[in-house]
Amino acid sequence: MNTLSRRRAGGVAVPSGRSAGNWVSLILLIAAILWIFRSTAAGMVEIWWRSETFQHAFLVVPICVWLIWRRRADLARLSARPGPWALVPMLLACLLWLAGELAGVNAASQFGLVAMLVLTVPALFGWAITRALAFPLAFLFFAVPFGEFAVPTLQLWTADMTVFALRASGVPLYREGMQFVIPSGNWSVVEACSGIRYQIACLMVGSLFAYLNYRSTTKRIGFLLLSLVVPVLANWLRAYSIVYISHVTGSTYLMGVGHQTYGWFIFGAVVGLMFYAGAKWADPEVVPEPPRATASRELAPASFPFPVWGVAIAVLALLVGTHSLLSRLEGRTDPRAVMLTLPGVAVPEDEFPFTPGWVGPAATAAARLETNGPPVWLWVGYYGPSGDGAELVSSVNEAAKRKDRRWTTATRGSLDLPLNGSASRVQSVDLRSDVPMTAVGEQRLRVLHFYWVDGRFDAGDARVKLLQAFSRLNGQGGDGAVVMLATPVDADTDTRLQQAFAAQGTAIRQALAAARQAR
Image (cartoon, rainbow, N blue to C red; front, side, top):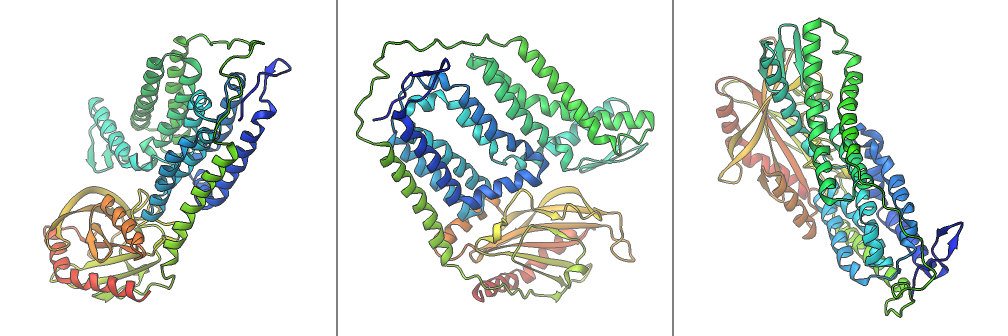
């Protein structure tokens, strides 16, 4: 039996001692969640720290606390009653976290963790208080470093619109993939030009602005849509204006140190105008009525069959059980080192044509497959059961390492390979280098990649994630590998890659199976 009284202190309604158990339980439960799932929480903070895209997430928790604090007078009018029904969505949040861990999807694990933290409020305080705090609790999900999957699409849009605007402005150019050449110089639309930082930060600030300034649901949704569209348009304007101004003036300032400063200036100006216009339509703030002296039916203490400590213990048991299940599944795996022996002629990795961009494999190996024409290079990155925090399928993985200045992605495509006896569409990229690979001067490579999980090849990212999860659930460990084939670009490139796989595909599968059995 827990309620919030309307006792006043300094003119502000505050919780009474009746709800002290709820607040103590909330603090202890949040601390327990952060401790039990500390590896996931630490991973989130690590991403905030190292990635400029998500550094705004450090502000999410303080803003959430402030939003809750400013509603304290309203909360004092509501009854705090434990909500055992919240155990059902809490179970779903635990399963989401578990699925993310099993499949190696960090975003799923992190969303599951934040959902657990959010659901402690309805579990301990009930529906009335949860409804009053709906936005502050939802705002907490901005702490999840999510959205980098959109970088390639935003990058392509930026390149398309920049090229379109330059041609419309009468600037002749030649484009190849993300690179284009104009009379005054060469330009490249890299990942940082996608505008993802602007997009995520503006969406977070825009949602906060809409919540604080509007009471109408229509206005809030409308401003959120603006917060999605305006950053994209601002980024297109930024990219185009940098190239066009540099071309017309012949200045190299915007091509160098002034590039980022000017970009933030354009973004700040455009978004500032958006908020200025949005403020013109702001609704007047609703001042809550002061608490009345007479007790209401809602505030009256009521007998409730689920004490707060009982619900807290049930939630804690669910959390501990979820983490223990993962520990048991991980305990079935063998931590021994991986030994890879590939078909073909072994190649030291420092002699491989490029540095593969797959992050954190447990073991790697490279080889050269002999053909009648130019060689086909083979590279395998093997990922163990947990990958030591790395993911076999991730938006950060790519053909060539991002900091490898010798190679840039020119074009993207696909190629049919008989991965498991039938044709499968495999992604490919053409890499371009300004540094000759050999004395002949070969400067282009076509690189394709696919995966090996649980004894079979697959080219689908989502399917591979599911295969890894089922493999771990079955006690097989979830081991997987990425397989790359690369060869110089010429008239016979695709045929050469297909023939190389047809000749060596079985041997590659056997080599990976042997590595798995030796663990």
